[in-house]
Length: 480
Ligand SMILES: [Fe+2]
Ligand SMILES: [Fe+2]
Image (cartoon, rainbow, N blue to C red; front, side, top):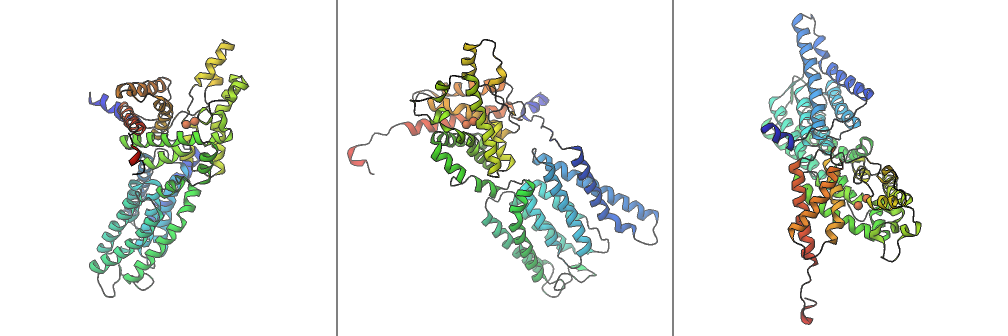
């Protein structure tokens, strides 16, 4: 019973596709990290069997740790790309190389905390925490002995950055973090390590001012500020999608969204309603709300290529499809809203995770109305011409958007006096038809989650109905 319940609730994740060459490059970088982190153990003379054994142990340990880091990042981000995995392990490689070359001149805080900020912003807190634990525990130079208190401060500060970095939603908060973390590190070093001249790494002169905690903390603040400056560059090179970037894209004053509201007002209204439905459903199942809100905003931008060909933008008098009177051509116009949408996405440099909403919200759905019209003319017409080209939703968020897209028009058109039961029946029918059509099979939505999505849509419908109820107003309180 337990097995069946778990299978229904936690579907098997779709394995991400990484090419063999990328896998090979990633593996080679992991080997390089292991070599850099352990080769100094072989330089001890005279070398005995114990030393070789301890080198082999360290080498294997770092290699396995790198593998675990990649697995954790894949688990936290099912849609992670090879470029992003490459970024995580390259940052680890850079940290290990910096420790080797500059351990006696740069504070370990400045080596570990800034990459943790980049990883937590782009890949999430758990990946960042894993990265931090590997980077903090492995020191390539055996002669460098980290002060225990400093080690504790590194762990605390980098964990705070990893945890907060994954949640931060604006660049201003990032700036605050880059000021408060160095101040915190300064105070903790001052309290735990000492107030006078201290060597932070035993046996060695340390940092620009010989282990001075003020210059250490100042250096950390400068490196963190530079990291924040470079985060947008990392976003575009590695396709990272930070919360701050998502919120920037969700700004309704963005030129593409402004164009949608002016040139296709019906589509814009439809988009706003879908945002509400999708957001509520995503909140219910614990998905990425910022991602779906932004994805929903851009899902139908392709309709800008011919707004009048879509029913929501027609004034009810003229329908170009009637004048065309060719169902296959009409189906091509509908498919074009996906193809043109992807072109708009490329032109406006939308991140891939957002662009994915454009084809996946339509999946391979059948354009039922035009298919029926074509069938009236030619009974043997192939269904293929009347299906969107896909792909079907590959994530929970794009699947929710497909369901919201399907339910929006039906809910809007529902009678104001319809009961909750009728609304839920309509929602269930639409969702079931998509399930039966195989549109949700790659989305990882469990039965439990689909149940919650139906409930969420019903809640939004209740809100819509409430808004549509006219309040009685007397002449006197019109302006109150
Ligand atoms: Fe669409
Ligand atoms: Fe839509």
